[in-house]
Length: 333
Image: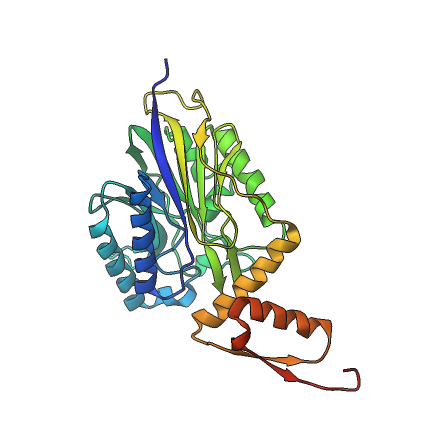
């Protein structure tokens, strides 16, 4: 008879700010404490949650990388029995190479580090300019359950790190992300993660950040898929939250794929396509203004629908008292 273990996991869907190391560290500590109160045994944070994503040229500054490592060390000291998976920038002191990485932490120590294998270099991504790819697949154990960690792009390749870790015995994969929003992206993610979970007979925990970072907007939509490819828990889009789910997983001695798929979590009500785009515009506007240290905006009002929509979005994002309209009369208005 198969031997199973219960595992309560938390997905910390947070809104970090690029470059704000101390503020991001404080947010990570806050959500870690929330996970402890919720009796989570493992909590995962998004990709590069300590530095904010994407950090771009900041990672070329030695002082910034050193400060990120210093903040991580402070966080680790406060970590108790609840395992934390934290995204950060790692550095090889011998070669000077830097890595998009995840620290797996417990009881005041770093149990191990996973370095992202697949570095995207298309559209808005240019990670190959900054980071060196990792190649190792460390596995970890909690409650006698074998799990692996991957980072964002790693899960998109069918024969990538998720498959490699599953072949080594992982029945749970923690995938941390900084995945930007575009119309229809949530459905694409659902299909891909479902396939990856089912093909590798492992549970996939997918945690994504929210927030605006300059021209990018991240929608969250964190989720968990069971080993049969079904959705068992999901977070709301465009809001910070800690999603908690109880999983039933096989212990290391149990053959992968032979375990039940029951879990106790909640699934969010999906937003319509228009509602998603509206939420992205409001969140992106709010974070662009606030994260850059502004308080107010000035909008030219021509009398047309376009400037009226912009004004409405700005008011929703910032409040009416912080939005100032300037009339731009013409023969049309």
